[in-house]
Length: 407
Image (cartoon, one colour):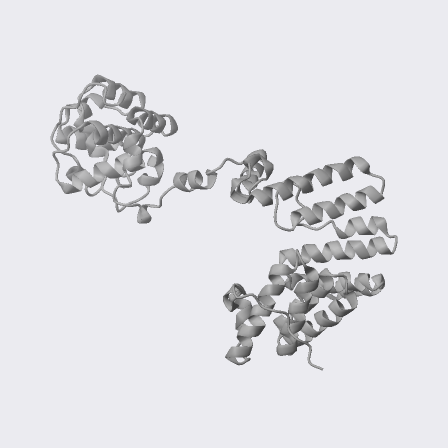
């Protein structure tokens, strides 16, 4: 005797079923696929308000598509919802054989509990590979395993089953209310009423937050990004620290962009010069400090090679010792004759450079004679005492500088 199918309303169409489910019906004829899809869509619509009628539609779908995994899964869910755990268990195992998927393992565990086999339920749960399950399924499995422990009177172990990474009281996901509520029930059985009340309150807050969705008050739940930021601040890290560290890293000379001198220009030139004088007492450090001031304050009248020398001195002033050991770079000490300020003379004398007055006068002959007498002039003087190549080229005509160029 043929069992009649439940009536399908006109407003239900195959498109009411998710596309992923409809794709599994492609092996059926077009007419049959549409009929099965409509019955399955009705089962989904009615499962909460009328589980029995939903189950009838699921049975009709299986009668027309008995070897389609999604149809057997729908029947298993409706059977579980109406308390027919034996049928649910049979259909769930059939679905697993057809599809090879184990994403309904939590329902299998709970159905084993429903038929009075908690030991078998624990065996099913332990055999599942949790690493391949999605987060929601892992949480559902933990709740089902905890229930099986309670069935066996293993209350402490039931609480242990719920100690999973997803148990976060400060964040709400779709599975959070059920997990929080299950933990509250186990704590209640253990006599820890205050903790149980706390977790039950968290479950209520999670339900409210999820029910309101985007309109929920931000205080009711914590977004993942906000929580991570708060944790970083608590541990002593500052938001955006990575960007600051990256911008503060030194730029290698070979990789420096064309405008690499801009950071030096934005700083106080006098501070850059004073830092060099304090960290290096040789003539090389003083010359670089003066060049740094010249690059900021004076108008350049030399040719392009002079411009490059001054920019190099301005950009590398804080690291004068490193510049001194690069033989390819033109000597910058000829720039000592570029200023006639008394303070420059005092700096040169304080550094132990003899004949500082002759250097200040800017005479090329005097500069050539006095340069070998300097305490240290590694860039301008070779080991034999002769001026280094390019030293005379670096020297230019005297040029007036504004007062206070260094300071």
